[in-house]
Length: 51
Image 1: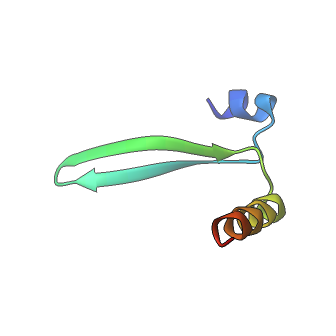
Image 2: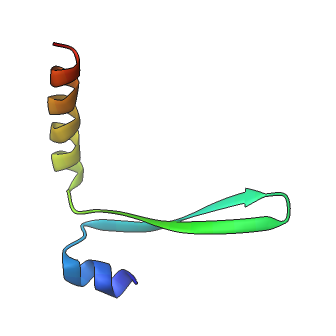
């Protein structure tokens, strides 16, 4: 899965584990934006919301 995400252009991918009692679940989270691009995107969204 990670190799496919890299081929698709993902900048970051991580496996997030969650536990509830004895049960463990995992999901994969990824982004196609760099940290700087995410920060800029958040600023733009906040500007729109606060208008």
